[in-house]
Image (tube, rainbow, N blue to C red; front, side, top):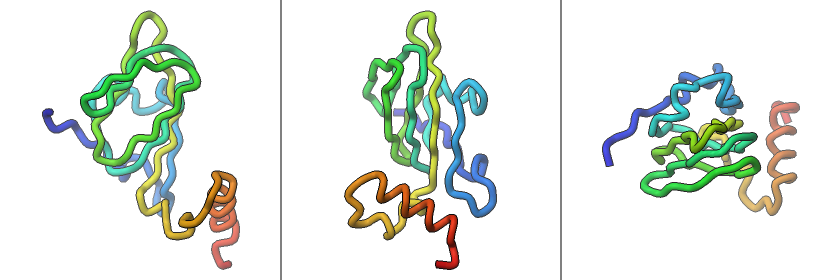
Length: 124
């Protein structure tokens, strides 16, 4: 497989922020149809539309409600199948965002609380 272009977190993340959220039809639309990879982790939620999600050499039919976790350095792309272009919400974050504070957490609410409290009360 040919090397896919790399989207760098430095293009997305503000200084000292390791999380970025966007909607595919509002920002970085050029990357929707193009096989690409990045130096961050992505959680992609299909809001509407239908299409295909290519991850490496695998192809998956997508529809509203589908959720994907894409590791860094994994080539992928979403593209349209039929008349309804997919609209995807992306939550992307650096690998460093997943720090040791998440180890031993057994459910998402514990992880979310850990992140929120760490950012609300950084001195603690």
